[in-house]
Length: 93
Image (tube, rainbow, N blue to C red; front, side):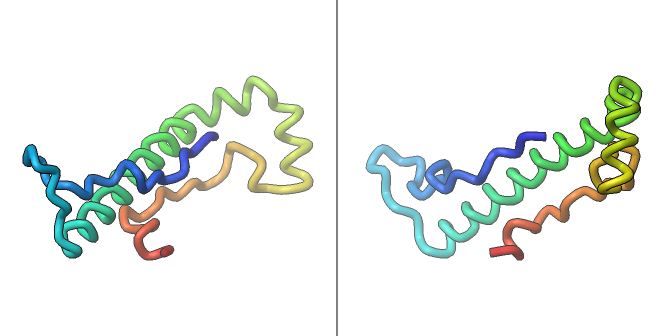
């Protein structure tokens, strides 16, 4: 699974007016938090999609996954997958 790193250059720090006025510090903080929450929601969508297709992944390469499972149980798609809390990236900073 490929997860994109958060890119803080995509956070809106200017107001939408034609003068491109810099937002206040509380507004920028809120914009960063909103961006990170949206990023986690996107991650969770990818994780859920992979989890929904886990049986197909397993069936396609059953013997390989069985060997991996003997070494590392987390390498097997047939395991419990927990989604991230929406504020995971915020609380991790």
